[in-house]
Amino acid sequence: MKSIFSFSLIAVAIIISSCNSAKKSQTNKEIKMELSNKEKVLALLDSFNTGDQTPVSYINPAKYIQHNLAVGDGLEGFGEVLKNAPEGGFKANVVRAFQDGDYVFTHTEYDFFGPKAAFDLFRFGNGLIVEHWDNLIEVAPPNPSGRTQFDGATEISDLDKTSENKETIKNFITDVLLNHENDKLTTYINAANYLQHNPAVADGLEGFGAAMKYFAENGLVMEYTKNHMILGEGNFVLAISEGKFGKGEHTSFYDLFRLENGKIVEHWDVIEPILAESERKNQNGMF
Image (tube, rainbow, N blue to C red; front, side, top):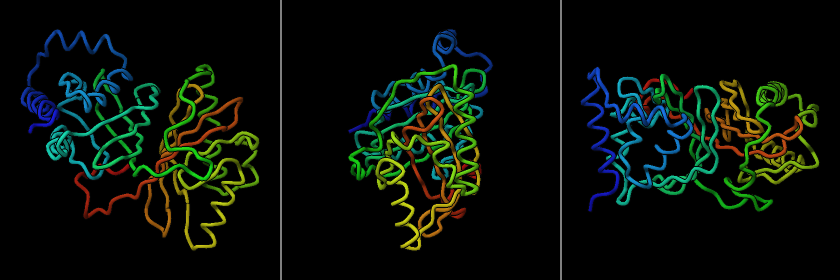
């Protein structure tokens, strides 16, 4: 029985074969002009559910840089993943989507070889997707406060405060997570209203403190060593960083924050180990 992704694979093949063609159809040009970059990403991810061929054309066939280290570069790598999909294909439910200049990032619940929580980041050039990063982790039960990896606020507001909120998160990452200035926690976090969606951590600063105590008592680490990107739209800001986690594994941290009145009030994250070089299918790096 063919999965719906057989149709997507055909679309990939068509685009690759036409890579050297100087002329694209007027229909595709019109579609690309009508849709925002965020809408193109939403359509692409929804094509996992529908099998629609059109959204694959939103990827630049001549330049698609892949940072998921388990996937080959270019459209060929994308097609290889689809070819190995289980019967029935993959599913994607985008819970949150944001746009910051040429970047679109999403918070998505996948059925991708089992239930996964993920953040995806896409960069656009001339209206087409030219680069992709992501972090994925298995879906876990609700945390000690009963929150899941997906629930919580979704409404984007305070668009006029995007730059200010990004600067706040940049300073939080630098002061608290990189420089360990924990006395500044309440400078950045609303201690009276801090909702936590990490599967192992409870709400509030007490939950954060209990998690850090557990790590210390069990010889575990959560160490941020470098921040690579700060992206945001309104009251939501995504920080992409690297460091060490658990027993010292080289790790990629994707942290999504919601802010109110200049302080962090809600947090989601996806923490993924970085593949060893010997296991990588591309050489573009995680970041």
